[in-house]
Image (cartoon, rainbow, N blue to C red; front, top):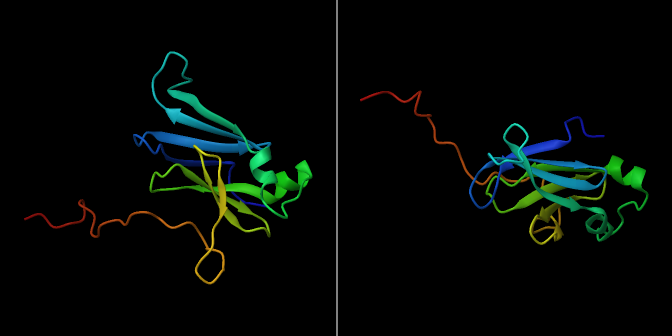
Length: 135
């Protein structure tokens, strides 16, 4: 069982706004930070997607809802702002889910082994500006 919360924080692919993705009972929700008349303290629901059919397309994944909820969880959001979420399963591999197309793909390396973790799309400059000597 995963030892972390049911949400992941990231940025929207189109404009980089702060967003939170959650998956609960096979329902994906993406909340975006922004001011609208219908927002809840600056957060509004931008997307909602039922993942039942998406999970059904994964070979070998349990069909039983209780087993599926236990063995599948949201692991990360793509830092490269590609519109993908990463889904981890207990014993069935790691997958990337494209939010716009609902296409799920298994993550592989050239030799067929699973990735350990999704890759970060950028690197932090060293030293950071606040540690760099002033000229």
